[in-house]
Image 1 (cartoon, rainbow, N blue to C red):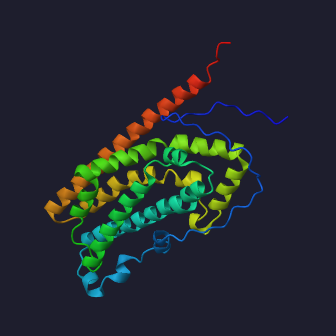
Image 2 (image 1 turned 45 degrees about the horizontal axis):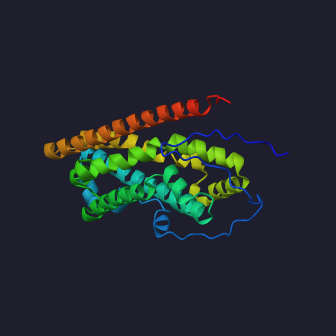
Image 3 (image 1 turned 60 degrees about the vertical axis):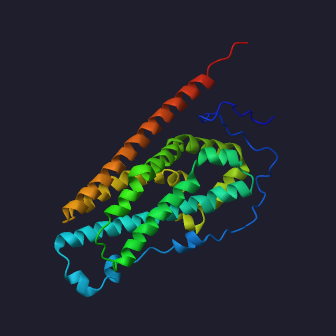
Length: 278
């Protein structure tokens, strides 16, 4: 007789749990429908360094501090490019095909990857605004404070905080559910392994990709503080420091939400494993 699988699974706050998919042959091939995503194609190549694009005359006029500021702005730009790329990989290589192949329902996907489309769009818009700054200034950016304050401050910052908190707080549960489903459902496991082997993943597994949003949030305050430290203009410096503080508040809020969710998951696990009276 087939080995009985435990019905105890961690529940999401929405009360969702993943049941194994019955009736699929583990050897059934997936139709190789490669989705051509324009954003993923655009982001496949790393952007050139600012020094290669700025004029030699403009470079020679920069002070040591100004050069350092440009280096950090370039780091913010290139790492945002890399982040948008990986979020797009999550969408195109994993989420959309999982729904298309009916391996996860739209409800399950919304629980595992909450607000992924909106978060990707927000990061993409931020990247595009940084890109425009570079182009408008011939790759030597004079001022970045308005761009970063628009992203992390005010109502836009509050919305960004809300979406990222939901996504990041679900990641432990999501990783746990994916691992459980891979063990129970051979077809799901084959899909994940095939997706992870695609060149777009650059040898990263899904478990490495899901935490990228949390990792990105930890980088913003450090990058912005480093830009502020090398900014000569006092008004510009103060505005960048303010945006760095906004980033710290967002990060602190997200960390708190992650703790709340992890405590809830522990309580759920304890509750579901309590022996029931006969």
